[in-house]
Image (cartoon, rainbow over all chains, first blue to last red; front, side):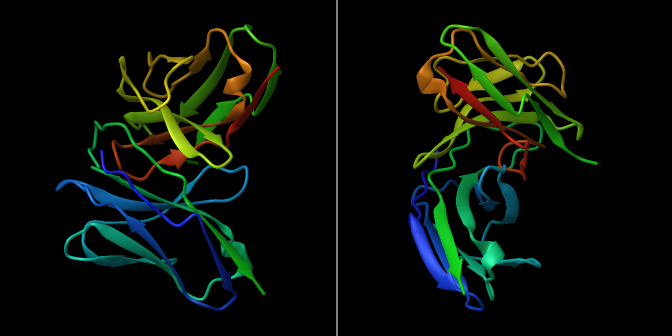
Length: 113
Length: 112
């Protein structure tokens, strides 16, 4: 299982771009990288998933270098409502099957005015 | 509406009194999981199920049981709860493995 390491916390201000990096040195060939957002007392919510290079959707971008040993979640122009815990998860997206998933401790992002 | 439901949302119980937390999903997902969340420890997977009658241990299975008799339901059973099982519990479902997981609203359990 690929273990992930993230910073425990980050601070930012409204309107800034925030980049959260996750380290996953022993990622397997079939593994994808997935990021979730969690607000207090709510279940995590899927943000974005990728395998290599760059993936972008309406809320975030995910950058994955060629060696895939790390990934960076980029949140453009954050607002107060982006204050949350962000989790990086690595594993194979096996439809109809699957193995144990290890979330890790996440990164607490705090956005201020 | 696609959703994962959990019941109860809040539960206070005493040591040793068996309890069950139910989880149900309406997305026809094969993969279902239970997680517990404790301050500073993130989300830890308790058990997961790849399909009906197929379950396996996650990272912290001690003191818990699960069953998967129907595809939509995945109850979490605490046969003899102890105070160290006081936690926030989440059920989740997905098509499989590290596909997008849909989480329930959580169950806050207190064991006295």
